[in-house]
Image (tube, rainbow, N blue to C red; front, side):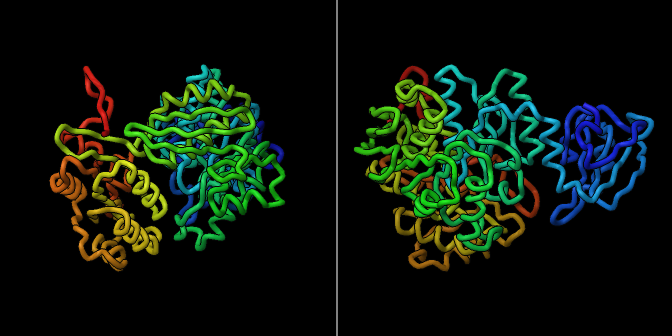
Length: 498
């Protein structure tokens, strides 16, 4: 495609500078030879600062936000690289991107939003679709690509240019079905602008990101945008959640509304829940039929996540009975209720829970095992300070022993983070250890073989962010170095959680 084909009539490109280009990149790190680089104004800087880097990496042209103008830059790859300046770039960019990637408009897309459960629902959808012989793309926190081959992602919801580029790559692999995690940041920053969704899912809404949104009402308003500001065919809403019930009765939602949960009013309802040592089961009633849902997963919230995934696929024509059968083969999402075992040692569970509600859900999910629970958790720096004491309250109320440790302190003083958490009542007997790996190993050493250790907060993350540096670190690596293995990976036999 030529530059003029993407940006006209909003921006005039002189014929002598009308370059053929490959992809569009808004991050100079993503520029490949032959791409166009978009330099926009940001909250704290301007993409203008990265034009030289983009040209160095092979950009054939640059569109920069600023007063209307034109200049040429030197390039190691071309005689000159045109830089077009235009004040309307932010206003026009979504239109331009959808022109460049027009073919993806035909893809069958599902958007999943909510505080917790986005990664689980999208990846369960991908797994279930795969078991039904349909390849499914995934874009979200744990990676982007065609399941299970995912590339590392920088954000839960990538920039629109990155999303469209990934979707086009999926199309080139004959994949026309994808599930996207859509964050509140992604919605307010227009990262999914212009995308059409067959189904939009709301999993829940609990306190998180108030440092960004300011209040729960503003946080809800951001999530609501997906259901009232986008072209969606069906809204799948969890009405066990108070904000879900609010959205389900919102007259501004014009799409078909399908509710799910344990509520007797839910159209898709799971009931008669039974916890088992290595999983759980429930009876599932839906508009497409009823049946026994058997899951090799732990944590009752995963029943809600699996139910959402099944309903989102059934709404798009997948066979309900086939989905029920496939659900018996679901695997936990990386860093979400991952069970680790070691002979003559306590069970260990890694989970990404980093909000008060998520931590409560995980601790409650472990209760049916009737084991003493040791919780290891921390609170992120440069984030909502008000949730730190709330997380400590949850840990104190629902764990037998608590270890407070670091979890991405970022630019904050870890001691101040501890002080915020310890301001909650009933935290006087917490063990405090800033070194996360030491906190985990000491928690394991002090827990009997009949107990269980929950390691919460980082989940799949393979780094610890301190003073702007991401240091290599992994909760899973700490466990494997201590002799633990993932449940089910013992050669010659099965592991059991009894």
